Length: 572
Image (cartoon, rainbow, N blue to C red; front, side, top):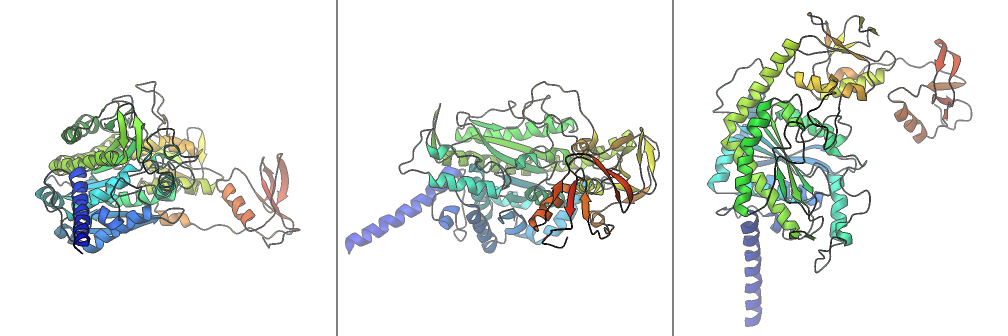
């Protein structure tokens, strides 16, 4: 009996010591936590860093925090293709949480150039901590769990002061489908004892790996084209708040160390972003990062390798919306423990560095609140002023493809770019735009810098070396006819909303022989997929041809789809 009591007491001491060790390892000295709020370790049943955490468990823990604390609430903002939830945990003081709608409306006044605020005493810093856009760079979602716990359960002054002055939003996994692919791989091939050999299966995923989403698309290139549901949900949420600071946590090669912004200067910076973002805010926040990483003895570098050129990065898009986007890169353990040129890289160590940077980001966002708020207000005022000075705008429209027009307009409206359907036809630059197929984007709007992003063709660069994309003119990617309008008078028409895109479509007259779909129609591939899915037989033209239709003699090009009426088992 005595032995049993001693064993039980030792086991309890081990559990307490283990929880304390986790706090001591990941968090700054002096952190105190509410015992009623479970740590990630207590909720999950294992120490952070000893396993890769599945996305459903991540969501479950954040939901538990929101259930137990009046500092937090969890919102579902969308769903992935594999039906995993996209969630955001909002954290602030109980008083701020009760007044979140008022805080949101006050903050959005900064985005409206017609409002002059100036006094930011009652305003809050809005901080979006985003993690794990590349699924096989997994340390950041683990860091999200610890960061959420730190601010929901923390009792020390740093936490309570931060929650008084800021609203924190934690998006724990930008790419849940990719993350869970990698999580399954890393946990399945984990050895006991751990195998640190870089050639071990644990560290070498089979293709396609977990970097991309369900359709193998890199979501850290999708903030501009918004091709996928994860990005569409994220942008819809983003424009409800316009955060002052947005983080984008990544991993890099195992033999590296740690990277934080500023990125590579000049040649790898976006041409529409004002210099005070790069020269001012980036360097200001860098001071907080190097101080925090020095405190824990982690090596790092900055102003090298990585860039902020492409507006579809998670760390660049916020810069074009009056915020500060920040990319972080951690040398990856790509598993639980891996050898490197400077010793073994442990999964827990990679998590700790991202936790440290997360806390430093919040610390800086609170300390520099007035600077951030003034930057955002000035950003949109100067954007509108530059747009007015530029004058005119851009006229576009495909004369034959309403689907293409609607898809491009939908992209513009998702990015909150003012778009007008002209009330008369117009001819410009040798192109004619017919009534109903003529659209106008004026430069005179607060989203002027996004207008430039969509339409301008940048052909000269500071540097000949690029990290990634070197061009991104969205209008060209849609093969959209467009012309610069330089007139002094604004063009008249109806400002469009996304609801207007539902539209009405002319019904097709019934045929006893066949139906034709031109292959260069924007939605032709989608229509083909639908028809085949319904079991219809579809033929494709290998040559151009002309034929009498219900609309007279028409020419059809290569790839035209023909759906014959005869021999179909389904009524088309």
